[in-house]
Length: 190
Ligand SMILES: [Zn+2]
Image (tube, rainbow, N blue to C red; front, side, top):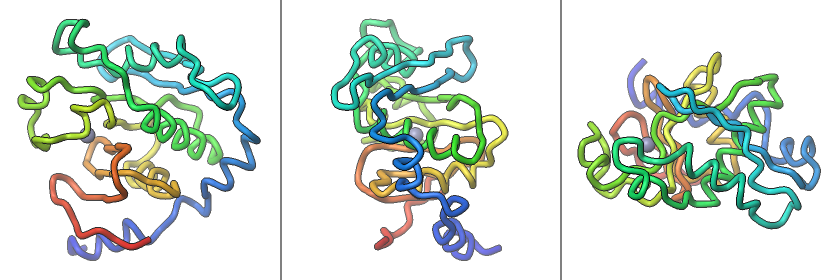
């Protein structure tokens, strides 16, 4: 398959007919929002409630998520920062979407916040990466293909930036755009 065909096919298919509407229907009002994350290469795993009243951020759960997504290559004082709440909601929505298809696995985070020095040392990282602002996560899910994970991200109404890689999918809370590997493709109007 030529790259252009591949790109077209990637964006044309939505995730098994699922939509954020389906998520909303399955999780009415979402009063309690819990994000299940594990850090790749470490034993850290959290089941963190970041919202318990359907409206406001629940600080203890939020701090756990920030802790799990910290930059592990620098001291805690530099690596533990506030992760963008929109990004956390995006991850939660993707997890709900997967849950609707029967997936019962955590999102495995391979990269969350990156300090400037870590980002500079990361191969293929954008100089102005959203990881630098705590607005991005690289992840995979056991038993879920990168393709299906990409589609779960893509099916969100406000999709943010999505990157498709061999071993992870990048999801950030920036503007809606997508790319394969380190090649940015023209924005689609969807
Ligand atoms: Zn990334």
